[in-house]
Image (cartoon, rainbow, N blue to C red; front, side, top):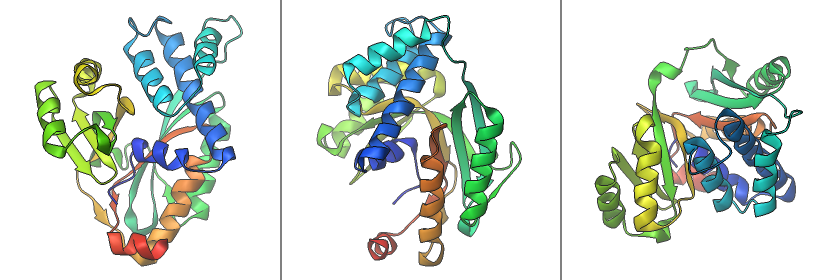
Length: 247
């Protein structure tokens, strides 16, 4: 299993219980509200909003919820959310970046710090781990979208920088400012993506053994379960045989 990306995060949540699904819907709606409030409430004129809606639809967020989230952004009583990034270290020296949207920085910082402390990690200072990651555009497609060669060719034609195809699906990487143009070009060839948004890509992966893997997943789950956390990205890599033992 490659390093935890926001797409794997979303798909992992999708298969979870009702509580996790409800939490995912809330996070998707929050991103739509923030995107619509920062720009125009029209996805054709607001690239971030369009990306948020793509991800929401791929994760079965009802149309009414999407429209309500956009409408909420235009109200005079709409909440104001801050984009906050936390950086820390997990079991085995794994570097972790946590992206959040919060209306209470003090609460979110305390929750993130506690999650790290209780699960074999520690919260670091700003910049402590992000130097080991590149900011990229990420576009995800399911495995059934095409063969690795077909996806690679389509991505190359659309202006992407790289493609990673695994048994989990296809992840297409772009420069941050090329994300939305590339996503539009790919949609014309491959149909709607599972997700299209900015994210992080580790420059080097840390191989995590069985002794640290279980605790690491507890940390990631604890962070994922926080309502304010939108994405958790780590630079870890876990061998298939270790994943099999973890069940």
